[in-house]
Amino acid sequence: MFKTANEFSLHIETMAAESGASHMDTLLKYCEDNFIDPADVASLISKPLKDKIEVEFQELNYLPKQATLDV
Image (cartoon, rainbow, N blue to C red; front, side):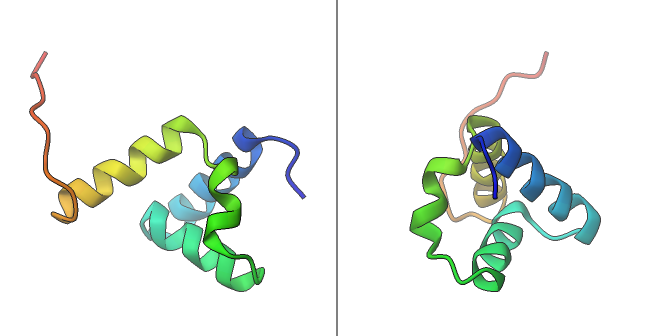
């Protein structure tokens, strides 16, 4: 269905924005609806989407927070 990782990631980001759900929840919902194992879409997740998911996990305290610089 998707030719590139960027197309897939853009689709997930658009769905997340429309639904108001987190990127990870949207990704898992997509996998569930299409009967796909989440491990199979790992190669389709772009770096910017991975970064957004990482930030969400840090905000939920699933990952340790990293220091940031206020510029």
